[in-house]
View (cartoon, rainbow over the protein chains, first blue to last red):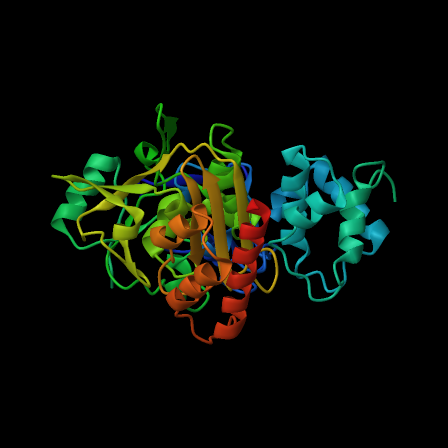
Length: 157
Length: 269
């Protein structure tokens, strides 16, 4: 058994694959967690964002060597948190989801923005989501959803 | 098939680098793209790989009376968040890539990659930064100009790792940084222009036009002495050897550089 471990959604895992294997492949193929999406494969689109030790990373660019000893959280586990529920409701209220492919990554970026403690003005939101591409919504409804979180947005459907 | 090495510490890394030909991988934001392959397939690395992102010895930011010392493994996000570092430098790094990329990409990686569009380089050229390289048996300190010897080419020997960047402390009076690109985030620059006014006068570094950053102390001297605007602009024009490519045209790049130079010189008057 491998000497290398990491924690995935709160559970310990041994790293038995090549250290160059992408975290994204481990999540989607080896673990069958398909909430994390593969888009551009080059860190442009943000569909594959996950948390590593509470910070967002493009999992398509992370070799498994870089998660040794770290805690990875994917959308599947994050979706069980209250913070996620608030973001989901805000997205629903604003109509911020169309095809939904970018949404898991978008939600991770929103969460990171919330945790940064920055005021949720339009500039901060645009900067915070600058690594996430959406080809359906034209972004405006997404920005509205996120900006609404600073007031009572997302509190109730 | 290539081998993957994961050293426990810097000493082990440098020992292995001395004994094998290895490709150092830090945040992976560049090399993992170059090694791209089908979903699930092994990454197409071009040789044996050594991972260095986890080495704590490369992650430090310290200062002396005269300089900041920034470990090669410091991420762009850590650089931006470090209050000790000067605002003009943090502003440049804060405009690179995207929030998630900045969490992974390292200072050393941008320097080692030596892309003509590397946005950290105009800053380092303007500030007269130095690069510290370490191998098992040696330590070398090179000015950034001597380290970046061409497009994707550096003076790093195969057994060396970039250990740190030494950023001199400057008394900054005025700055002008412009990154021109198709969009603001996640973009390779058409032009990356850094002008500083420090205690010794103007310093100008122009990136993303030539293969390496343009900096001319002679023309800076001419600006400091209040020389004619035309002679300065002509001097810079003669140094720009850009070409048309998928990001922009030679003409557009030169126009932007000239406009920024004029803006800089007008503000000075």
